[in-house]
Length: 604
Image 1 (cartoon, rainbow, N blue to C red):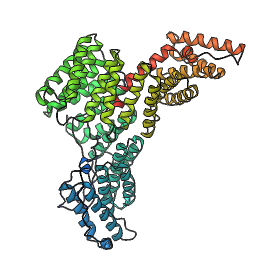
Image 2 (cartoon, helix red, strand yellow):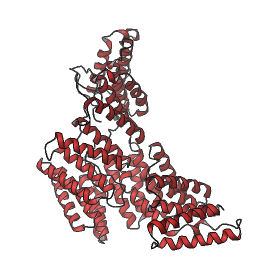
Image 3 (tube, one colour):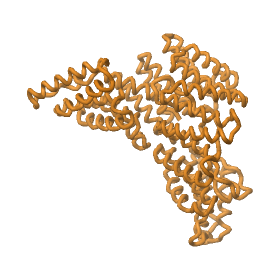
Image 4 (cartoon, rainbow, N blue to C red):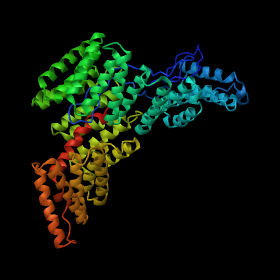
């Protein structure tokens, strides 16, 4: 998290193992950049996209040490009545830090930090906001997060934000900025992306007011917020922020700097997600040159993988193979043959060889990657393994082996089920599982998987994304197969509203929902509503999309039948949905969703 710092930290405070506010006096509002090997995300229907330039948004797992057997509680040596001693708060806060540094566990540290905040509150001068209180609340919230108690951290941080007063100066602005960013991270760990983004926006606003619009530290926060927008698949907002970051770094950083390289990798990810592959390739080439100039061999290899992804999307397969093989050579020599980075390149090659019809080679690379994931080297995260298995499942789906794909998806879900901040990823995998169940005719299980995915997406704030609309449409199709017509109609209606807003009425996903909704209305006896939708679809095709699409003739025939039926008898028994739902439309929806779900929504 950028700028997770606080005010008046004792100079002799030891370093912490968990993220708690820590700052020397008079430090300006400043985001801290965290560098690590990036992950990839994309909603597109092709190869998983270029890596994000930073995993600073990756969240730590809760402290497992607290699960160990606890020692008997010691009798408190500090009387509650003595908390009004002004020297006690700083002493207790230092005890909390020392306890964490000594490895005694966060539970005792939490007790000290809570007592410190009470002491600071009692000793605060009436009418004067206490920065010490705000700092101690930040520490309390950080310890709650290290224990996995994110819900309890939220009200503490909300209170901490209200203590300082920004007009009083930089120290107060710093405390509020830090609180908003820490609160945003906590909401992110709870899967509440919309709330998380709002907190980051508030933090950025305060930082810009304090430092100006073009400060390099503002650029770091802009990129951090851009990554959050990418995670929420809000690519236009992410692109605007990333452009601002690039502009600031052009002014304040030397040419071909590491900061500019990170910005360009994120911009490439955004361009790829939006389908602008040529521009994405341009950004990646410039990023690679910067990394070469700075001697970052592994980062150059990671960018080569991203370049290979772009070449694959552009069907420039020979160049893609060359890029992947370059990266593979570097990863094997620097990290070993069984590193997950090697496995990730195997997955890319498997997908590429499937596209070029070399099925034996494709399957072989899948099996090699699975062997690495089956015996991961120390340091491999559950998220890396789950992401790889999800990608391989998409290839087995292309092999027409849905049962094998289903097993891999279920393994991936099991790996992530206890990980905080993975609700959206799990929801994406559950949606893919729903597709697999649908493909093998297990419609009740399909509907249950979609229902669970929809609930998680609603909770995480993605209920207005195009991806959410596609999931609702798929769940509606599962309900159709179970003859739950009323429920299907509600799902199609909600999907239509979302996709019209996010994709527009002429998008293929939106047209598919129109067709499904018309068929559902007909099955419910709402002939006039079905006619109205089909007339609207035909008008769109004639005026904007053209009539060459094979769906046009089919929809025209269906409309003619409905008009004839409506003129003959409104009460005539409706035809079954199985006959009325356009099979091509159903196939399109399945293909579209499965491709989307194999990418961005499913990795951290």
